[in-house]
Amino acid sequence: MKRCRERDRTAKTPVDAFLPGERAPARGEANAIERATVSAPSFKILIFLKRRPGMSVEKFRRYYEEIHVPLCLEYTQGVSRYMRRFIDPLPNPETGESGDLAYDVITELWFDDEAVFRATAEHMSTGVMPDEVVEDEKNLFDRDKIRVATVVEYETDSAVLRAS
Image (cartoon, rainbow, N blue to C red; front, top):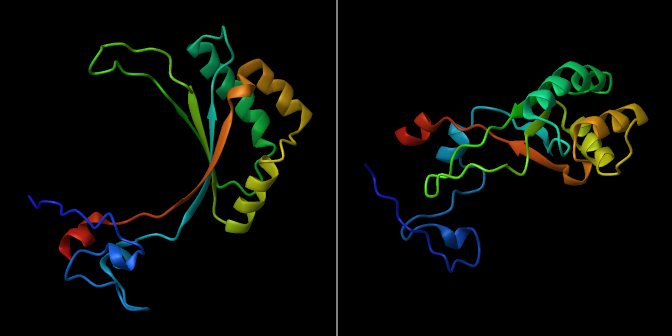
């Protein structure tokens, strides 16, 4: 197993951050990471959602999938994938406690087109939503706890990196 070496934490620029004896790749020179990148960037909006107080996890998930998803599908032009990642807490390995998590689901909106992704993110940040979606969200979510983030994701083939 290879040991990791520490990079210079006092580096002033990215070029200074290379290990002694290393050099930054010349402009246009393909480095191992560039060769290992196997995909164009993926564009996503992540929405972190908490169920409304008093709603059971089972009822939350059923309502989300059976009522809220079909409603939202009417407003997903330009979205290539609409995923919901329901989160289940595990016990803390130190204390054994398994309390409530900050969020119950992470919703992912995937986009193939960067311009559509950026326009959607900008629109979502205005808070302007169709009235029927807002009313439905009141039945489902603790709307004060909703958080949104954007992601630009690259995939790297780690086998290519290990081979270089």
